[in-house]
Length: 366
Image 1 (tube, rainbow, N blue to C red):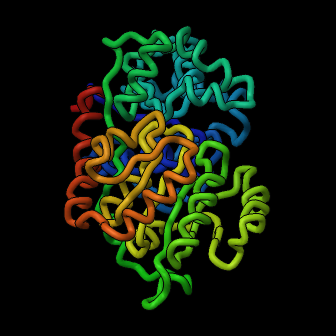
Image 2 (cartoon, rainbow, N blue to C red; image 1 turned 30 degrees about the vertical axis):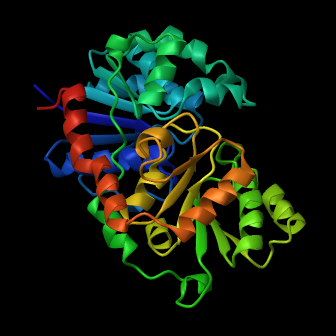
C-alpha cells in the first residue's frame, strides 16, 4: 500500500531544480498524496510557497555529510513508499543511505544537468569525479529521470543503462506563472516609452556565461537603443561582471538587481529573453519566458535549448560563447519577433499537469 512520497533536496533557494521539486510537492499534495519534503537546511526563498499539507523534515542544518546519519535514520523510521531525490551529490547520498538503512523504499533520482559538462567546468573535486560516482552508484537506483534527451544521452555516455532512464521535463509552467506575470514591475526601465529591455535570468556564476551576454549587448547597443537587466543571486561572479560592465561602457544601461521573487513579471515586459549558458540540463527560465509570450534567444549548449526551441523553430540558437552571433540574433529578434501566441503554446507543453502524470508512472504512485 502506498504510504508516503518523499522529495529530497538540499534547500529551497531559487534554482530550477528546487522550483521543480516545489511544484511537484504542491501538485502531488493537491492530489491528496502525503508528501514529505526532506531538506538539509530548512531555508530558502521558496519555503513560503509550500502548502501546509507538505511536511518539512529537517535533517539538521549542516552539510550533506553531516546530515547523512539523519538521512539513514529517516529511511529506517519513516519507510516512505518512494523517494525522489534531485541534484548529483544528493542523489548519491540518498542511494547510499537507503542501502545502509536496509530500506525497501523505491528510489528515483532526478538529473538536472549534463554531468560530464559540469565536471569539465568544475573546480570542486566532488563535481569533477561525479561521472565516476554516477557509474558506481546509479545502478542502485530504481529509475533515473533526466530532464531532457540531451541529459539522458550524457548519462548513457557516462555508463548509465538506457533501460533505467526515463526522460521527464521539469514541471515548469504552472497557473502561478501566468498569475505572477500580470503583476507590476517596480523598475523604471519597464514603463511605457522606454527603450526595449533585454533580460537574462540565472545565478551569477560561470555556467550562465553572462560575460558573453554583456559583450553581445555592447554590440547591440551600438546598433539600437536598448537596456539589459540580469536577475539572479551572486555566486561569485558579480564583482567581475560589474568590472566588465564598466570596461564596456555599459554602466548606464545594465542593471543587476539580484534575486527577485517574481521574475515572470520581468519576463512578460521584456522585449527579448536571452539564455547565454555554457551548459544546462533543461533551462526552466527559457520555457517560462516563452510561456508568457516573450521572444527568446539561446546558446545551443548541452543540453535543453535545442529541444525546447525545436532546432530554432521557436527562437534563434547561437554557438556557445559567440558574443557577436548572440548580439546579431538579439537584434534580429527585436526587429522580427515570433508571435507570442505561438511561443505561449510551446511553453505550455512543459506543464505541471503533464509532469505529474509522467512522474506518477515512474514513481509508481496510485
